[in-house]
Length: 270
Image (tube, rainbow, N blue to C red):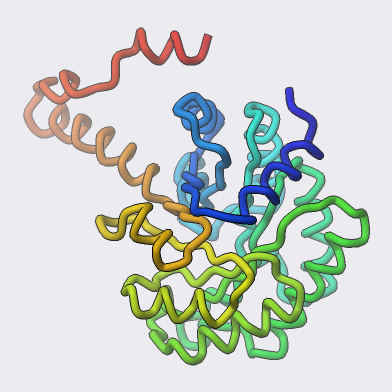
C-alpha cells in the first residue's frame, strides 16, 4: 500500500495544473472500483456514505465518518479527499480538534463548509466562518501533515444565490489558509468563471452531479478539480430502487437483466 505521505504529495501535484475528476465513492467497494477505472484521486461523499447507514445527509457522527475514511484510505493507493462537512463542531477550537483527528485517517485533503444546517440562518456569520477556516489551517499545519484544506461556501445549496457573497467568502477563506475553494451549486459558465478569477491562482473545485459541463468545458473555464458529490450514490440507489419496486409492485424480476455482471465484479475485487 502506498504511504500516506506519497498520496498527499501526489494530491498536491494534481492541483498544480490541468483539470481532473475526483469522483465520490460511498464505500470501500466503490472506492476500489473507481481506482480500478483509472481515476487519480477520490473524494468521500457525506450524503452517499450517510445513506449506506440508513441515515440522512449530515446525520452521521464524527466517529462514523472517521472510521469510514480510515477504511477507504486503507483500501486504495490513490489520494482521498474528505467531505468533512462543517468539521462536526461550531466553535473554531473544536473544529481544530476534529480536523486533527480527520487528518489521522490518512486523507490527503479535507473540506470545511460554512452551513449551519438551520434553514432560517443557513450560513455561519462571516467572521465565525473565517475563524473556523483559520482553526482548520492551524490544526493541519501543527503536525506538518500536508493535508490540503478546501474552504466551502454553501450559499447556493441553501438558496442564497448571491455570487458577490460567495466570492467574498471564498476570498476570505483563501486568505484564512484554504488551499482550494469550492462553492457547490454554481452552474453557469459566467458564475464559474467569476469564481475562478476571483480566487486565482488558488484552485477551484466544481461540483457536477447532473448533466452539464464536460471535463474539457470546465477546464476551459479554469476549474482545477471536479467532484460529483452524491451523484454516484444516487445512480446506485436508482438501480436498487427500480429493481426492488418492480419486485414489490409486480412480482417480476426483469430489471436484473440490467445489472452489472457479478463475475466482472469478482475479477475486479480479487
